[in-house]
Image: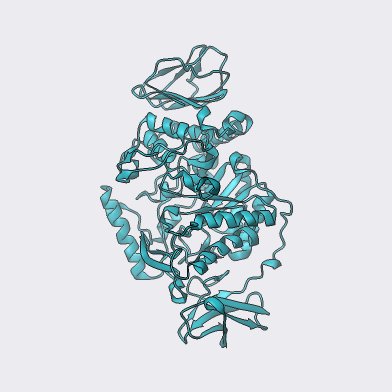
Length: 591
């Protein structure tokens, strides 16, 4: 016996179609329809028919075995045998997040094949696995941000059972799982939601079209649609947290913002399940209210991505000054971000063309996730270049050292830890030819705006583009990849071993730098990080307090009683009280 329910407030007749049989559904309150079907069990395929029209997938379909246009399939969550009883995730404040894309992590691109790579992550020291969106999107080779069946794990990845096997395997290895979800929009190919009800509104516009209806008529059912989705991932799939994409494109003028309601409901679920759950936002607003508690006027999420930190570090290492990086590039930008959370906490931003941000003073660094690279800043590049394609090995090592000793929660992007040679370009697999062509033309326009030859930009619809993004695990043991992998593992070990590096207090971060000479010293208690981006050998002053080198990127680095000598593009991690000479007269000092 299965009870089918669907929200279709504008329909006058609704049927559930199972094989060739169309079964009338009964109208209920608030636009809901239902039908109890004795013959429908787990694995039964079905669809809904509105007012005698075509058969449509269930908006809350939990399995689309034939893709976005096919029938839905009944799932019995109680049938899976979990082995993670008593599991409890580490606190996010002590976490090392690893962002991965299931489709390109392995040649097979499935949940089951991803399990084979989990031991690599545990050896590295990762604590949290962040899955890029895994629910149903058009075709098989997509990044997931154009998904349409937000309740259904992608059929090509392994469907519901495959995802549960991956989560269970992660927990068996001590790895928490964070799932990337998109509540600001749906993809264009295969989205049938608007046929069922007012899920969208033209009162607001997003880069993807009409916004999700969170504050208009019938908003309550739309909000429940998203909150119930979050509950499903956290309860039925045992996921430990959600990363919410592009919250700056979630428009809601309600007295209680959708994000605040979501956080409140997840806290109730956390108490019921007895497991720690986290919510992380991607935001382009530099607004601390996202992570402030409701009692202080905030939304109550646990953390947000720190875009300023990434941009400041990337622009400094790669020397890029185009697009969103035009606001950054100096040592001072990085210093302010490390010591204050945001670089843009109110000043005018050229890239945003407005006074941008708000001061996060008083917030812990644990409220921010910091990265050298992530899926956005690699995949949105025309050629999908990683940081290792743009800078020297030495500068990659500097970037890793800054991220993994920063007061923020560090996040790595798959393959970053060994400097993967494969790019990670933008790729799609739209089955609609017109939509596929529209994606090609948009990418060409974006590339031309950055001065690139559109003919040299990978076709996002070509299967070869997706295949180039797959990681080459055979290169991990080759140089220079193996050297970089050991570097990352050692940095993670040091972060875990020294308590000063897990301290989120931003007011305890002390930074000295010389903008002209291009060197910086970052002090975190008894740990200091010194790096040189200048063209020549640099002597950076330190106190004669017995500081020792825990880790150095270059054998030519020398540690003396009152200075550290660094060749170009090198970095050293020092241990010892007062390793940073705070009294020295240099061009910048923060903290």
